[in-house]
Amino acid sequence: MFTAGREGCSRQAEPPGEERRIPKNMKDRIVCRVITGPTASGKTALSLRMAEKHGWEICCMDSMQIYRGMDIGTAKPTEAERQRVRHHLLDICDPGESFSVTLYREAAESLIRRKWEEERRELLFVGGTGLYLQAMMHPMGMGTVPADEEMRRELHQLADQPGGREKLHVLLEKLDPETAEKLPLNDIRRIVRAIEVTRISGIPFSRQPQREMTSEFTWKVASTSLPREILYERINRRVENMMEQGLEGEVRSLLNRGVSPEAQSMQALGYKELVWYLEGIWPLDRAVEEIRKRTRHYAKRQETFLKREPQIQYINMLEKDAFEQAESILT
Image (cartoon, rainbow, N blue to C red):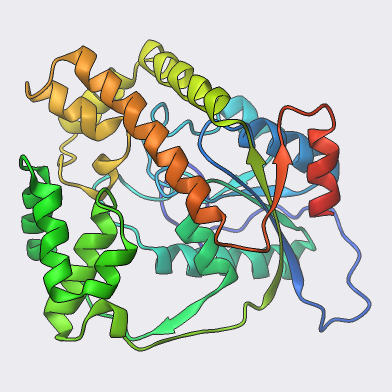
């Protein structure tokens, strides 16, 4: 089982938590609770208060907070926040490693079962990575196609060229029009994976064998929500704060440690743009403005993705009873 901590991916015994009542019907599914929502919409503060009140532990549901050394740009919970509530699936990978949705689901499901069986403790999942949430709530059984790292590098290099994203999307349209129609131009990682799977298997990604399985857990999901103009203001301020906190130095340190600019982790918002600044491709002011712009676009995509899940209930974070709204959904 992955454990949070800077010592790396490992299997370690954890101290027992306080006892919780076992359900009368042992066939009842374990309840998993989620606070999701677009970036900068107030998930962290809400989740800490909720977890403290109910004795839950927090499980990270963010595809970039899993990487060690990537703290500022991912808005990772601080050490003080981790002291308030125990966190899991943070800092479990080196930034030079790749990590998939499947690996996340396996690690999270193992954690859920172990925390309940050993400690009768429940988890609160917190994060805005919609693919992780989807994989947990609607697990898919599908034929797996191994990665081809050389092909991935070539495709990412194509995407980084002027007009490269458009060329990459056209390539996918020729191979698999159905998948191309579903994926936006900027979803480079999924476009690359769809091309990779189609080329290797000879079967379009949209026709890969798959079936939805029933989750073994019961899910209660709340999403934070803010008016678009307020959310964008918060995003702009967050980027400014990250730069003041030393995001440029964090990116420089990762590169100095030998992390490749092409690594999966370095495609994260804030990191890729500053790599281009450090490589002399962009001036700093343009890099920062691109971070703001792309983060706003990402927040909009998060909202669109989450709206596809009918089970999600929304919290108006501007209302005085936002905490009570969340509590009514999750308890």
